[in-house]
Length: 117
Image (cartoon, rainbow, N blue to C red; front, side, top):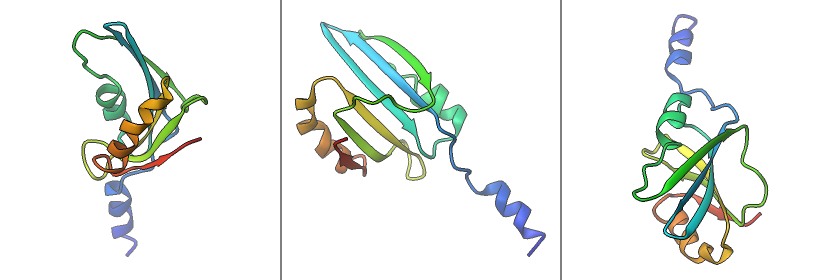
């Protein structure tokens, strides 16, 4: 068992450290802000992939923070991101009436749990 333990520790995913990115996008008169809080995505993949959206005709600004700021009107907790092992919490800011579209997407397609702070 002692010989197997180091191997198991090497292949098991480690919990992600507190890490989040605030994504500001603006285009065609609409400004959107979301924050993605890493739950189980490898750090490099989170920073270089998930936090680098490519949105056509949008100006994107990404800010890395330790945790998502307060003030979100809704949070999709445990949203599946790119595979069953990758999870993140997505915080939504701005127009709270958008929750009527985001909540069903969160709970259906993302497999997350919607909560209102």
